Image (cartoon, rainbow, N blue to C red; front, side, top):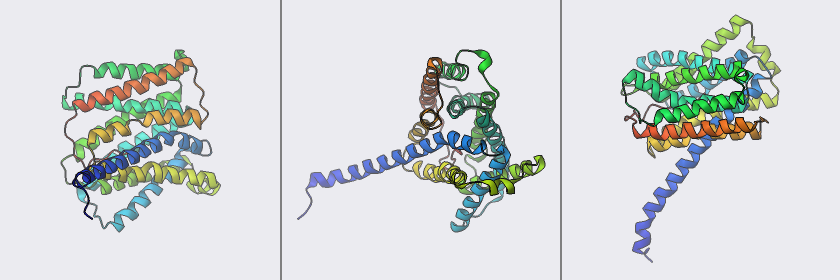
Length: 321
Protein backbone atom coordinates (compact mmCIF):
# COMPACT_ATOMS: atom_id res chain seq x y z
CA UNK A 1 0.00 0.00 0.00
CA UNK A 2 1.49 3.36 -1.01
CA UNK A 3 2.25 6.01 1.60
CA UNK A 4 -0.21 8.94 1.75
CA UNK A 5 0.97 12.00 -0.15
CA UNK A 6 0.88 14.21 2.97
CA UNK A 7 3.16 11.79 4.84
CA UNK A 8 5.50 11.54 1.84
CA UNK A 9 5.83 15.32 1.73
CA UNK A 10 6.46 15.50 5.48
CA UNK A 11 9.18 12.81 5.52
CA UNK A 12 12.02 15.02 4.17
CA UNK A 13 11.07 17.76 6.64
CA UNK A 14 11.05 15.30 9.55
CA UNK A 15 14.36 13.86 8.40
CA UNK A 16 15.88 17.34 8.21
CA UNK A 17 14.49 18.21 11.64
CA UNK A 18 15.98 15.01 13.06
CA UNK A 19 19.40 15.81 11.59
CA UNK A 20 19.20 19.34 12.98
CA UNK A 21 18.40 18.01 16.45
CA UNK A 22 21.34 15.58 16.25
CA UNK A 23 23.69 18.41 15.24
CA UNK A 24 22.43 20.59 18.09
CA UNK A 25 22.83 17.80 20.66
CA UNK A 26 26.38 16.98 19.54
CA UNK A 27 27.38 20.64 19.60
CA UNK A 28 25.90 20.93 23.09
CA UNK A 29 28.00 17.93 24.14
CA UNK A 30 31.07 19.75 22.84
CA UNK A 31 30.14 22.84 24.88
CA UNK A 32 29.65 20.68 27.99
CA UNK A 33 33.01 18.95 27.41
CA UNK A 34 34.75 22.31 27.06
CA UNK A 35 32.98 23.58 30.18
CA UNK A 36 34.30 20.58 32.13
CA UNK A 37 37.88 21.14 30.92
CA UNK A 38 38.70 23.56 33.74
CA UNK A 39 37.55 21.23 36.50
CA UNK A 40 39.36 18.20 35.05
CA UNK A 41 42.54 20.21 34.33
CA UNK A 42 42.52 21.59 37.88
CA UNK A 43 42.27 18.06 39.27
CA UNK A 44 45.31 17.05 37.20
CA UNK A 45 47.53 20.04 38.00
CA UNK A 46 46.84 19.62 41.71
CA UNK A 47 48.42 16.17 41.42
CA UNK A 48 51.48 17.18 39.43
CA UNK A 49 53.54 19.90 37.78
CA UNK A 50 51.70 22.12 35.31
CA UNK A 51 54.43 21.75 32.69
CA UNK A 52 54.57 17.97 33.15
CA UNK A 53 50.79 17.77 32.68
CA UNK A 54 51.01 19.83 29.48
CA UNK A 55 54.04 17.83 28.30
CA UNK A 56 51.88 14.70 28.46
CA UNK A 57 48.58 16.14 27.24
CA UNK A 58 49.84 17.87 24.09
CA UNK A 59 51.98 15.01 22.65
CA UNK A 60 49.16 12.54 23.36
CA UNK A 61 46.75 14.75 21.43
CA UNK A 62 49.24 15.08 18.57
CA UNK A 63 49.80 11.30 18.44
CA UNK A 64 46.06 10.57 18.17
CA UNK A 65 45.59 13.23 15.50
CA UNK A 66 48.67 11.92 13.70
CA UNK A 67 47.18 8.41 13.60
CA UNK A 68 43.95 9.84 12.18
CA UNK A 69 45.90 11.76 9.52
CA UNK A 70 47.66 8.54 8.50
CA UNK A 71 44.39 6.60 8.35
CA UNK A 72 42.78 9.38 6.30
CA UNK A 73 45.88 9.44 4.06
CA UNK A 74 46.18 13.18 4.41
CA UNK A 75 49.31 15.02 3.36
CA UNK A 76 50.72 17.91 5.36
CA UNK A 77 51.40 20.66 2.85
CA UNK A 78 54.03 23.35 3.10
CA UNK A 79 51.40 25.97 4.00
CA UNK A 80 49.85 23.66 6.62
CA UNK A 81 53.29 23.40 8.20
CA UNK A 82 54.24 27.09 8.11
CA UNK A 83 50.84 28.36 9.29
CA UNK A 84 50.47 25.54 11.83
CA UNK A 85 53.81 26.26 13.53
CA UNK A 86 52.96 29.96 13.94
CA UNK A 87 49.50 29.18 15.31
CA UNK A 88 50.94 26.39 17.46
CA UNK A 89 53.33 28.81 19.16
CA UNK A 90 50.44 31.18 19.92
CA UNK A 91 48.32 28.27 21.16
CA UNK A 92 51.19 27.13 23.40
CA UNK A 93 51.08 30.55 25.05
CA UNK A 94 47.34 30.16 25.63
CA UNK A 95 47.81 26.74 27.25
CA UNK A 96 50.72 28.06 29.35
CA UNK A 97 48.84 30.97 30.91
CA UNK A 98 45.53 29.13 31.13
CA UNK A 99 46.85 26.01 32.86
CA UNK A 100 49.01 27.93 35.32
CA UNK A 101 45.95 30.11 35.97
CA UNK A 102 43.74 27.09 36.59
CA UNK A 103 46.22 25.92 39.23
CA UNK A 104 45.78 29.22 41.11
CA UNK A 105 42.04 29.90 40.81
CA UNK A 106 38.74 28.04 40.86
CA UNK A 107 37.35 26.04 37.96
CA UNK A 108 34.32 28.38 37.83
CA UNK A 109 36.48 31.52 37.67
CA UNK A 110 38.70 29.98 34.98
CA UNK A 111 35.81 28.92 32.76
CA UNK A 112 34.03 32.26 33.01
CA UNK A 113 37.05 34.55 32.68
CA UNK A 114 38.33 32.67 29.61
CA UNK A 115 34.89 33.20 28.05
CA UNK A 116 35.81 36.87 27.66
CA UNK A 117 37.49 35.65 24.47
CA UNK A 118 34.00 35.84 22.96
CA UNK A 119 33.94 39.63 23.36
CA UNK A 120 37.69 40.29 23.03
CA UNK A 121 37.94 38.57 19.62
CA UNK A 122 35.48 40.84 17.75
CA UNK A 123 37.13 43.93 19.26
CA UNK A 124 40.53 42.69 18.09
CA UNK A 125 39.12 41.93 14.64
CA UNK A 126 37.74 45.47 14.52
CA UNK A 127 41.14 46.94 15.35
CA UNK A 128 43.00 44.75 12.86
CA UNK A 129 40.46 44.64 10.07
CA UNK A 130 38.69 47.99 10.57
CA UNK A 131 35.38 46.19 10.88
CA UNK A 132 32.38 47.91 12.47
CA UNK A 133 30.54 46.17 15.30
CA UNK A 134 26.96 46.63 16.42
CA UNK A 135 26.74 49.76 18.58
CA UNK A 136 25.43 47.77 21.56
CA UNK A 137 28.29 45.26 21.43
CA UNK A 138 30.51 47.39 23.65
CA UNK A 139 27.76 47.57 26.28
CA UNK A 140 27.64 43.77 26.29
CA UNK A 141 31.43 43.59 26.59
CA UNK A 142 31.37 46.05 29.50
CA UNK A 143 28.78 43.93 31.30
CA UNK A 144 30.94 40.83 30.83
CA UNK A 145 34.06 42.59 32.16
CA UNK A 146 32.10 43.92 35.15
CA UNK A 147 30.85 40.40 35.79
CA UNK A 148 34.40 39.03 35.84
CA UNK A 149 35.37 41.72 38.35
CA UNK A 150 32.53 40.82 40.74
CA UNK A 151 33.06 37.09 40.22
CA UNK A 152 36.78 37.19 40.97
CA UNK A 153 36.73 39.75 43.80
CA UNK A 154 33.30 39.48 45.47
CA UNK A 155 33.49 43.28 45.47
CA UNK A 156 36.93 43.42 47.16
CA UNK A 157 39.53 44.70 44.62
CA UNK A 158 42.47 43.07 46.39
CA UNK A 159 40.81 39.66 45.99
CA UNK A 160 41.57 39.53 42.25
CA UNK A 161 44.24 36.85 42.39
CA UNK A 162 47.22 35.77 40.33
CA UNK A 163 45.28 32.87 38.81
CA UNK A 164 42.47 35.18 37.67
CA UNK A 165 45.02 37.48 36.05
CA UNK A 166 46.72 34.60 34.24
CA UNK A 167 43.38 33.36 32.88
CA UNK A 168 42.60 36.90 31.70
CA UNK A 169 45.93 36.99 29.81
CA UNK A 170 45.05 33.58 28.33
CA UNK A 171 41.69 34.97 27.13
CA UNK A 172 43.47 37.82 25.31
CA UNK A 173 46.02 35.48 23.70
CA UNK A 174 43.24 33.04 22.80
CA UNK A 175 41.50 35.89 20.95
CA UNK A 176 44.78 36.60 19.14
CA UNK A 177 44.93 32.92 18.18
CA UNK A 178 41.37 32.94 16.79
CA UNK A 179 42.00 36.11 14.74
CA UNK A 180 45.37 34.82 13.54
CA UNK A 181 43.89 31.46 12.54
CA UNK A 182 41.20 33.17 10.48
CA UNK A 183 43.61 35.58 8.80
CA UNK A 184 46.32 33.01 8.09
CA UNK A 185 44.07 30.16 6.92
CA UNK A 186 40.90 31.71 5.50
CA UNK A 187 40.76 31.29 1.75
CA UNK A 188 44.16 29.57 1.74
CA UNK A 189 45.00 26.05 0.61
CA UNK A 190 45.14 24.52 4.09
CA UNK A 191 43.55 21.39 5.53
CA UNK A 192 41.87 21.68 8.95
CA UNK A 193 43.01 18.29 10.20
CA UNK A 194 46.62 18.75 9.07
CA UNK A 195 46.67 22.29 10.45
CA UNK A 196 45.41 21.11 13.84
CA UNK A 197 47.97 18.30 13.91
CA UNK A 198 50.83 20.73 13.26
CA UNK A 199 49.52 23.08 15.97
CA UNK A 200 49.25 20.31 18.56
CA UNK A 201 52.63 18.88 17.59
CA UNK A 202 54.18 22.32 18.03
CA UNK A 203 52.55 22.60 21.46
CA UNK A 204 53.86 19.15 22.36
CA UNK A 205 57.43 20.05 21.39
CA UNK A 206 57.24 23.38 23.26
CA UNK A 207 56.03 21.83 26.52
CA UNK A 208 58.36 18.84 26.36
CA UNK A 209 61.24 21.31 25.95
CA UNK A 210 60.01 23.55 28.79
CA UNK A 211 59.45 20.60 31.12
CA UNK A 212 62.95 19.28 30.40
CA UNK A 213 64.57 22.72 30.77
CA UNK A 214 62.85 23.43 34.12
CA UNK A 215 63.50 19.95 35.50
CA UNK A 216 59.83 18.89 35.55
CA UNK A 217 60.60 15.35 34.43
CA UNK A 218 57.79 13.83 32.40
CA UNK A 219 58.77 10.20 33.05
CA UNK A 220 58.37 10.33 36.86
CA UNK A 221 55.06 12.18 36.44
CA UNK A 222 53.70 9.51 34.08
CA UNK A 223 54.78 6.76 36.49
CA UNK A 224 53.09 8.58 39.37
CA UNK A 225 49.71 8.81 37.57
CA UNK A 226 47.03 6.65 39.14
CA UNK A 227 44.01 5.30 37.27
CA UNK A 228 41.96 8.43 37.99
CA UNK A 229 44.67 10.71 36.58
CA UNK A 230 45.01 8.53 33.47
CA UNK A 231 41.25 8.69 32.85
CA UNK A 232 41.28 12.46 33.37
CA UNK A 233 44.12 12.86 30.91
CA UNK A 234 42.39 10.70 28.32
CA UNK A 235 39.22 12.73 28.85
CA UNK A 236 41.07 16.00 28.20
CA UNK A 237 42.74 14.63 25.09
CA UNK A 238 39.81 12.78 23.51
CA UNK A 239 36.60 14.38 24.81
CA UNK A 240 37.88 17.96 25.07
CA UNK A 241 40.14 18.17 22.00
CA UNK A 242 39.85 15.42 19.38
CA UNK A 243 36.07 14.83 19.60
CA UNK A 244 35.16 18.57 19.41
CA UNK A 245 37.40 19.06 16.39
CA UNK A 246 35.56 16.47 14.29
CA UNK A 247 32.11 17.52 15.53
CA UNK A 248 32.82 21.13 14.50
CA UNK A 249 34.09 20.08 11.07
CA UNK A 250 30.96 17.98 10.55
CA UNK A 251 28.44 20.39 12.10
CA UNK A 252 29.56 23.48 10.20
CA UNK A 253 28.57 21.68 7.01
CA UNK A 254 25.17 20.60 8.39
CA UNK A 255 23.99 23.87 9.93
CA UNK A 256 24.79 27.58 9.88
CA UNK A 257 28.06 28.96 11.32
CA UNK A 258 25.94 31.29 13.49
CA UNK A 259 24.08 28.34 15.04
CA UNK A 260 27.37 26.52 15.67
CA UNK A 261 28.82 29.64 17.27
CA UNK A 262 25.83 30.26 19.54
CA UNK A 263 25.60 26.64 20.73
CA UNK A 264 29.33 26.45 21.45
CA UNK A 265 28.99 29.82 23.17
CA UNK A 266 27.17 28.10 26.03
CA UNK A 267 30.57 26.80 27.22
CA UNK A 268 30.82 29.30 30.13
CA UNK A 269 27.35 28.26 31.33
CA UNK A 270 28.53 24.67 31.65
CA UNK A 271 31.85 25.77 33.20
CA UNK A 272 29.89 27.52 35.96
CA UNK A 273 27.46 24.63 36.48
CA UNK A 274 30.25 22.02 36.61
CA UNK A 275 32.51 24.18 38.77
CA UNK A 276 29.81 24.70 41.38
CA UNK A 277 28.34 21.18 41.19
CA UNK A 278 31.42 18.96 40.87
CA UNK A 279 34.43 21.10 41.83
CA UNK A 280 32.70 22.40 44.96
CA UNK A 281 33.26 26.07 44.13
CA UNK A 282 31.37 28.33 46.53
CA UNK A 283 30.12 31.76 45.46
CA UNK A 284 28.64 34.54 47.53
CA UNK A 285 25.76 36.75 46.35
CA UNK A 286 28.13 39.20 44.61
CA UNK A 287 29.97 36.36 42.88
CA UNK A 288 26.69 34.86 41.68
CA UNK A 289 25.73 38.28 40.33
CA UNK A 290 29.08 38.36 38.56
CA UNK A 291 28.41 34.95 36.97
CA UNK A 292 25.07 36.18 35.64
CA UNK A 293 26.66 39.34 34.23
CA UNK A 294 29.42 37.35 32.50
CA UNK A 295 26.97 34.89 30.98
CA UNK A 296 24.54 37.60 29.88
CA UNK A 297 27.29 39.86 28.54
CA UNK A 298 29.14 37.18 26.58
CA UNK A 299 26.03 35.55 25.11
CA UNK A 300 24.48 38.92 24.24
CA UNK A 301 27.77 40.09 22.75
CA UNK A 302 28.03 36.92 20.70
CA UNK A 303 24.53 37.36 19.29
CA UNK A 304 25.29 40.96 18.38
CA UNK A 305 28.62 39.99 16.82
CA UNK A 306 27.02 37.38 14.58
CA UNK A 307 24.75 40.08 13.12
CA UNK A 308 27.81 41.84 11.71
CA UNK A 309 29.94 38.72 11.12
CA UNK A 310 31.74 38.53 7.81
CA UNK A 311 31.55 35.29 5.84
CA UNK A 312 34.18 32.87 7.08
CA UNK A 313 35.92 29.91 5.58
CA UNK A 314 33.94 26.85 6.63
CA UNK A 315 37.18 24.94 6.94
CA UNK A 316 38.48 27.16 9.76
CA UNK A 317 37.68 25.41 13.02
CA UNK A 318 38.07 26.67 16.56
CA UNK A 319 40.61 24.91 18.75
CA UNK A 320 39.52 24.90 22.36
CA UNK A 321 41.91 24.91 25.22
